[in-house]
Image 1 (cartoon, rainbow, N blue to C red):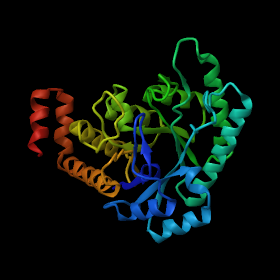
Image 2: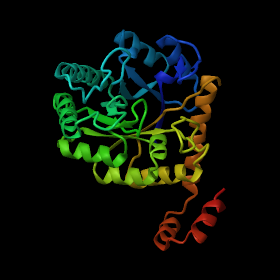
Image 3: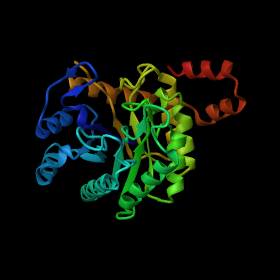
Image 4: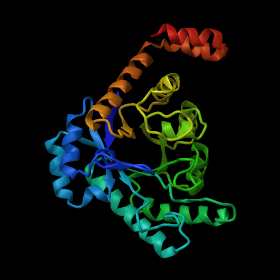
Length: 318
């Protein structure tokens, strides 16, 4: 069974384009909250925000009995790297990004998770002729290589998303991101599959997982849900019950077990601990539905490809 973690960035003040929800909270409060979330085994820490005092961080993790699923390297930051981080036209900025990513990888190694995830949302374009695509992939490969080659025991995971804040992100789909990773030849560069980003991008999450695994690049998984029109970071299964079940079933089939699911869920005005307890509890419920699937029967149904038989079978499990 996979362990469950929450992203510390969602345990304090959060905002969208119009409103700020919750309040700013210090790290000790955030980790104490994580310790009160039902079913929570650990956290995905945010770098650099959570690493101002590494010794204090380690003590707090131990105090609240929390593991670490990954270190989230924030590659978009207010006032810095405004025209992209990994794909900046400025070589000094790219060196700065690589140096900082190496530091985050060092912390991941020290904490024992040996995994850094990053979502390069500001690497992209709003309009045609804004980027030289033939050049920026070279920039990205060079920047990731400068970090990945320095610490091959730590995996770096690129979290893809179609847009936000750029109209089109460079790493927008599972296929684009897997292909880029393959072209670098870096064995420790892979992909974070966020189910909400896959849904928002018009993908079938289970298909995305299968493709990434086939490429050897399925390194990490984020769970949430949305309506397919925007990345709302809702509770798992709120809109896509069977897509969520299909993903969890496929991940088991692919061998993604005894690892971590991290939760990218936006609580808005709802009590944060209550909201995350619901998210994690719902995931365990979804896993119970997967447990009821008869592997032989579902494989037979998928081979027959007759939805008039498959869909009634699925609903017979409820």
